[in-house]
Amino acid sequence: MQAFLHRPLGFSSYPCVDLDATYLRGREQAHNQVISRFVIMAIGITATGKLEVIGIVVGDGEDESFWTAFLRRLRELKLRGVQLGSW
Image 1 (cartoon, rainbow, N blue to C red):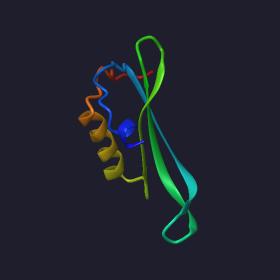
Image 2: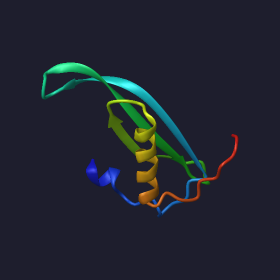
Image 3: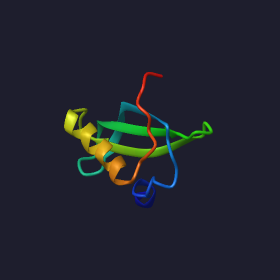
């Protein structure tokens, strides 16, 4: 999983990237209790229309710093070719 999450993204161009977030419930091993965790997923769409998961991150909350860190991580992995615009 770590190799997948840290793989370079510069080998492909993604003109469109869809970001989505949700809360999922899961068991926390340390305290053996069920908790809600925030999950962000980035789906890249290639020029040929192929969908690829390009990033996933799990955290405790949906604040600006969490989103910023996730997007910076995608940039560090050489995400390129994203076009801004209204779809």
